[in-house]
Length: 202
Image 1 (cartoon, helix red, strand yellow):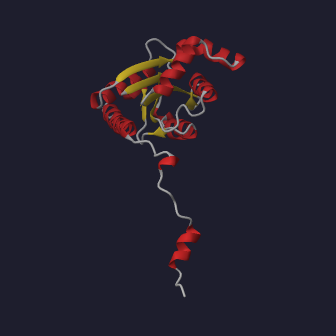
Image 2 (cartoon, helix red, strand yellow):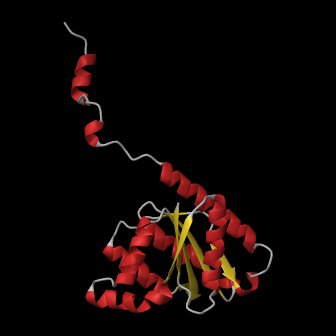
Image 3 (cartoon, rainbow, N blue to C red):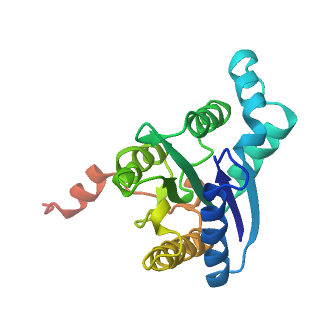
């Protein structure tokens, strides 16, 4: 399984990246995965240029390919003004312009970090609607980590539960069979002919 973590953390070290790493490790422990991390901090200049010239640079194009080719995504953003960061939103805006179907049907685990637990609603008020709009399949459990959650009881349980949901959803998506081609359907008898055959004769 190919698992991609998109982290919008700005500092080094970053609690946002740390949360992404913990979620990826928990997911890979339940379903073996090759994990790739996309650090949006390193792509900020190319994201800005993409909006002005319409073309992704080499690193940004590589990130787009990684996200589009992933079997599952873990997306993590710090909270700014009670919502996702501008860098986070800009990346997914640019991706959707480049490939509107990049996230269609893709399992996504949403997560966020912030200074206070009061911003935990960002998961359902901002992140979940964004990825639903992008046609992704968002796992039921989102993970929010406030400053006081690190090392406290409860975060590990949420991480494990969300990782289990992503692993199960990704495994299901990977084994799902494609729908048959139209030309492989059996011949369909028009309804009028079927109705006529039921009418009494004579």
